[in-house]
Each structure stands twice: as C-alpha cells, then as structure tokens.
Image (cartoon, one colour):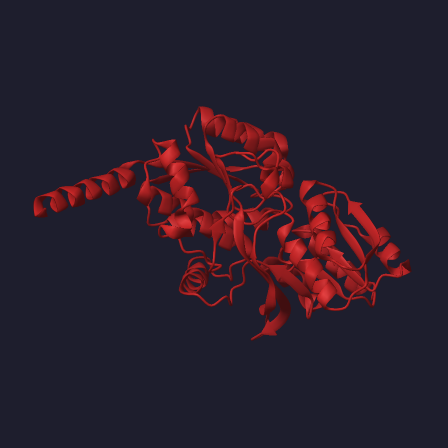
Length: 379
C-alpha cells in the first residue's frame, strides 16, 4: 500500500511537471493606438502582471488599431507564423466577431478579456471560446434594474451602432420596468453629441442611460455637463473607469454605474492585484486591467492542471479553473454552460477620495448572474 501511494504521488508530480513544462504561446491582439487605446493598454498591462512569474508563457503582441481587417491579419499571422495556442485581448465586439470564429474553428482557444457579443454567447458559441469578463448585456441589465429601483419611469437611452451597443440597450430594456422615451444609436467613435443632447433636452425623459466607452464617453459626459441638462445619468462602468474619470473631472461626481469589479471589493486577490498594479504601473487599475489580469490567471491555472498539447484536457482545465486554483479579483466566479461568467454585478457611485475621482461600491445589483443566451448555445 505504501509503495503504491509513493508511485501514485510520483506520477502526480510528473503530470504537474509535464503541464508546467509545456510552453504556451499567447497572441495578444488589442487596441494600443488611437481612440480606445487606454482600454487595450490596461488589458495588456493587467495580463502581463498576471503572468510575469510564469516562464512558460510566451506573448506575441499586436495593435489592432480598432480596425477589423487589421485584427484579422494579426490573428492569421499569429496562428500561421507564430503558432500561438491562445489568442486574447480584443476590446471591441465588432473586432471580436471578425476574429473569434476563425480562431476557434482553426483549433485555437480564444479567451475574451472584454468583448462578449450575444452571438458568441448564443447561436455562435464554441467549445474553444471562453469569456472572462461578462456577456455584453450584463452590466446594462444591472443598470436597468438599478434605474427601476431608483424610481425612474422614462429613460432616454443611447449607445454606439455596433454589436456591443445594441446588446447594451437590449440588456437595459430587459431589466428596466419603465418606458423608453427614445433609443438612439450613434456612430462608433463619434465625439460630437450636440444633436443627441438637444434631443434629450427636448424629451420628456426623467433619466438618461448611455453606453459610450473610451473617448466617446469622455466627450459625451463633458458636453452633457456643459449643456446643463438637469437629468440624472446612469451608465455602465465602461463610461466611469479611472482613465475616463481623470479626463472628465467633476462632471462625473455622483453618477451611478454598474460593474462586476471595483477596486474596493474585499478579497485577498483583489487587494493584491490593486497594490501590485499601482506598484508596477504608477496608476490605479481599471476594470479592463482586472479583466486582463483574471484572463492571465485563468491560463496559469489551466497550465497547472493540463498540458496545452491535450486540447480536451486543457479546455476542461479552463472550464474548471474556478475550482482548481484560480481566484478572481471579483470574488465569486464560475462559468456557465456557454463559457461566460456567473458573477455578482454591483452598483457604484463616482466619489472623490483624497483628491482623486474614483468609484465606491454602494450596493449589489445582480447576484450570481449568468446571461440570457445560455439556452441558445448548443455546444
């Protein structure tokens, strides 16, 4: 019995050694220049921080310039020339829709640290596709629920005209119990919102819900404040993250927003992440950075439990990472059957702390929340 136990233990050690001995090549395709580059830089930096002590991860990085054709070219190069095993990093849903199907159908894994379009959660889900952030509708669903609980009855809602924008307003309407005064879709990358703000001013809305990530949100909030429209704003975390708050200033104070992550979530992993990120980069992390970090940590966890050379085993290790060593900065985390997160989503308020604008958790929005498209996914 003793010899058998020793043999089993040695076999276990050899298995773990084999898993760690396999180099995993990761293609990081994200937005590093132009509009929205701050989002991609945060994802890249969070991911790099997560894997900095893992010598068997090799990263190939490329700037998609927020252009689908460039993203497709980068993915093709990384798969054909660099022989990557995993691709990650894409910020924008239109780029994800251009890249992900080809990646997973070529037998590679795609781990999303951000974009979660409804088609990839539903009818076009795939066993090699995992989303580490959220399904696009999720934060907006929580916002719709919050707006109802706050007593709003008639919302003016606005988002860019691309997959994530449509998912956003669909999610808001799914949980908002009031009526929709107007539903407006703007050009992706738009920075002049005079016409939209004029419509808001002339409307009978009692609240405004907007999803305008990156520079779009900065422009909208500033112009909305300057126009002195006396209506409460509600948005997702994307429009009230650290980089945006720094650019917007006091116009954002008091605004409620929804997020699956916040720097003040109390768990050891999150505390370490926030401290390590500030130490490494000299700035507070954003939710994009937390998503990049969690994506890296899930890969590290999978490497500890399976070899990348055995795709079936590695896929199971990714799926089971939350029970096999991975600890999310968010706290509770699991995958639904369509490989999207089951997690809590919070309501935050923009506040000033020690002269710096930031977000403070004020309540839970949705608890153990999955996504609307699980039953459409036939894996």
